[in-house]
Length: 448
Image 1 (cartoon, rainbow, N blue to C red):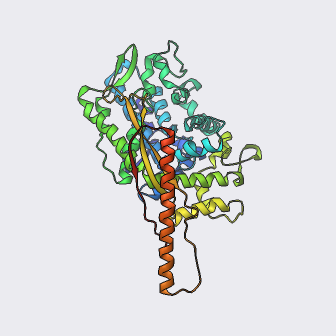
Image 2: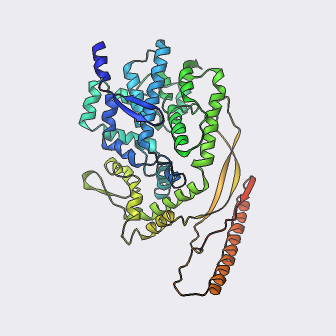
Image 3: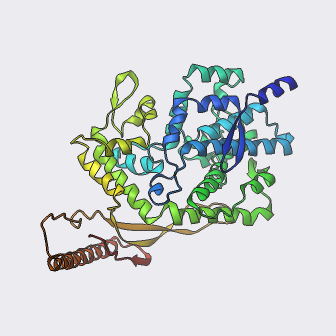
């Protein structure tokens, strides 16, 4: 056995990660990484449209998935060492690592933009999440004979694979109150394994640990949360008859830093005004391009952008590259979509008119430290500015004529913005929202 372990160490592949340093991944994980289904993640931006705002945010789902697999292994191995009574075996550890590696297989172009904006508008008749697509993509990946052979070599069965995607349940929290255990992969005695990659109980999981550290690094934003310290002090305890991953009381402020980091990233990057404008523009372009994009799937059948999620062979080919495909196309059908993407490239963006903070009741209780009775949501208003775009005039004009035309454009812009401002005021008053604060920013447009 010791000789086998010694030999296995030479089969581990080392990845030099900018966040976690040199990390070793199991040969089975490497075999999964080398499949087309996983390699497509190299071409899916982690932060979607944020790359057009933060030049450093060029990282992809590929490296994030490697990082989550590594951290999942670090946490489950630490629990195994410090609490041998949990009886965590090698198969448990390997399954958790695979879960971390494959948890984002189902993301579409520009990550959450695709499943959060595009699919709900393109196909409002279905409820679809990238977690469900991850399961389908993983099943498709498992059809690879080499991967299946590698799985059997490490004695993994179909029952083991069931441990990987508990988040696909419509309401995962029911497992902690239901008398019937819904998972087939592991019994209730190992319920804590389902909290490592995606923790629906309190939101503290290695998926967040990696993207907090990775996103902060690439965005140039300070991350005050130390995930290594959490891994050191994490223990499994019995709470209300159920085993959960817990932390010591002295870790309170470290965990508060984690949630503060999340808030800061949302405020400064994920929900950044220009980020959301660009994502809305990309979404509009995708909706206009949807009928004209053709992707070949299984059996030679052709799929649109919005229907590719129904066929994993077609979905494997769908990445951020569709942006360039539309942008560089000469098709007349893709003309309207191409115009929107050209506006992004030339920074002729939709105009942010204003936002209001709306107080909404919250049903989310992060944990006993940070339970909230309400939360703030933003309603933002943008103008696509179709009637206010710059008009090119090739006539020769004197300096006086140019100044006059410039003054006329400014007056027209002010009138247009005032009109939109008043429309927004009437709209939110008619909706009857309880407004905490309304912020309006009248933006001077550079139309020259």
